[in-house]
Length: 326
Image (cartoon, rainbow, N blue to C red; front, top):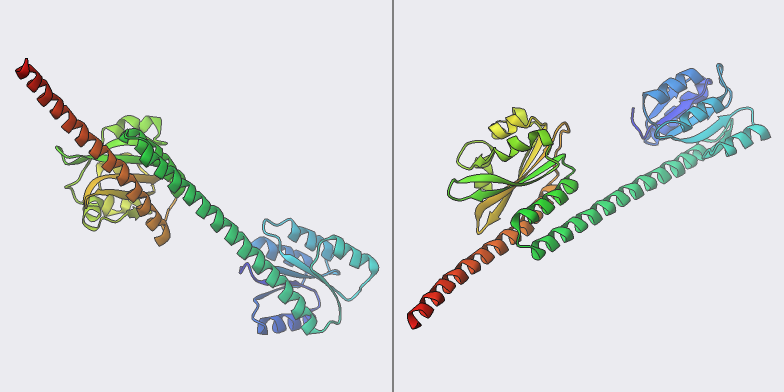
């Protein structure tokens, strides 16, 4: 059922048909029910945006249908229609939180005005909820980027930095598990360096599974395009045909390459055990921005190693000169 549809529950078939035809011409999807039981069945089949319900139905009171609709996970707006208007019924409708109360016979433009107001309010609520969710998501992204930036500038311990960043990225992309790999140049393999939420029973296997760069599969695509690669069906995806992904059986995976001086220096891998995760272009761009931040850690570490190596060489030279002077 269309969640923006209108459900009309009225045993007067002529009225129900007239309302349906009019609202359909106005661009709405209309569903008809001619008894309370039929109306409840329609409500169980799926959410609707608006319920137009007659107070007097052949098998039950319309108030019962109204209360059942209000108990739904995504309750609709409610407009009461009746040919037997009383003060009591009006009070019941108002106390029940209805959006309108129409006495038969009513003019269709009046009904259309109520429907337009109700649907406009629902649309506004949806837009506000979407805006709130988007704002919260952007705030979380900014917090993660700030945390990663601080980590990148605060430590030269590459393994600790990658562990912290891996944790932040797991939260950011909503993964179940994350792992960081660094290139071991002599062997030409990506070695597991840090992980987050790696199951204990898989830890030993995780540490013993480096990723050779020269083999076929997703690695070749990454190293050629320098772009993230993801799959929502890892086990059946030929790009992920590698022992590591057969050992850790999971549904979805994302590989995020780490580039340094246009060469692959490492990678992050994120896994979803059961969820079929699909990434938007924005999410992938965000992941790439994070990867660029991580390369700062690697660059700083390399510079520190080079400076330390040069300092040691100078120390050896100074020691030799001291000995000669003595």
